[in-house]
Amino acid sequence: MVVIISCHHFPDDERIYHKQIKSLLKDGHRVLYYTRSNSSLNLSNGLITHKNLSMKFGISAFIDKVFYSIKSIGGINQVQIHEVELLPIIKKMKNISPKVLTIYDVHENMEALYRTFSKRVRFLKELSIKVRNYNENKYLQYVDHIILANPPMGFKTYKNQSTTIIENFPKIEYLTPLEQIKKRKGNQILYHGHIGPERGLKELVYAMKQVVDIVPSASLNIVGTFRTKNFEDNIRDLIGELALRSSVIITEQVPHSQIWGIINKHRVGVIPFRRTPLTEENTPTKLFEMMICGLELVVSKLPPAQFFLKNSVHWCDPDNINSISESLISALTVKDGLSNIHENQRLIIEKYNWERKCKDYLALFKNK
Picture 1 (cartoon, helix red, strand yellow):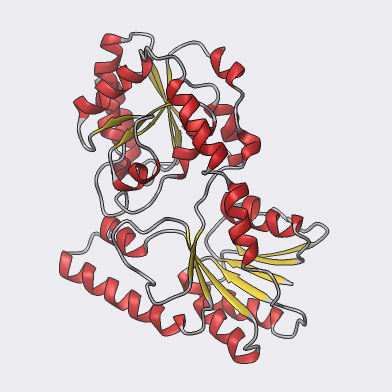
Picture 2 (cartoon, rainbow, N blue to C red):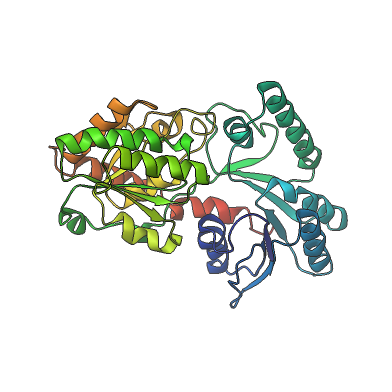
């Protein structure tokens, strides 16, 4: 039996449930899945038993309840956690069952996350990072294997640990046929994901003012959840000030299962990230989702995206409004047919798909 534990993600998280857990179930593993959320979703079915605890339980209480639940269950071969706060469970499991394989899935570079979002002065920010790393390192001796969701760009974290890089690539089943792509009409541009200052959304709205002057039919759809109410107010006010209400629309976040239909209604996908510690380290999942759906891509020239793509996108300079607008206009008026789309879908089919990474993931769960 495999135990999967998460305390911050939705139960039907794309990476945890739709990719990892479904792959384990397809491979014949029994899965005991613990989540902490206010969702009423129950994913128990056949080989999976799902137990959700309310967010009213703090992390310590959640850990105690999960450990109490699993400590007397026989036949547990692997335990996988998805947040640093859950490392105490790994230690507890190792103390009672030393042969249990423990896996720590690191979704994001936490040092880069702190450096991007912490409002503290630099000294206190770096001190908090050192404290966080110290607390994490106390438990790494109980971790048998670490999964990284991003290839390291600069930080050499976990260099002394056994690691596997398992990116959040899409499933081949979402590949949009070229015949469907050829039928697209209009000049719709899509951004989807978190909506915050570090994502370059303010620069993108300014750029759209220049784009519609050259391509009047161009429109931008921003899909996702605003990080703060203040930033939402700023973006909505900016759209009004620039007289873009008919050209820029905002759509609330939708379940991931619905995003594919939305992506396929657009011609161009844009990832206008600013240069921050986080965007210089973490690979945007939306990059591969837009590739598999056959969109022309406008992407900030940052190390993670450049690691995967070369000349099949319209690169723009981070934080540069003029560069973003020029790249969007280039993508909307591309003269070479589907050459970029052909190349990006080829990369998905041959390299950047979940089916290839799934093999690496399942290999961690083979009983020795």
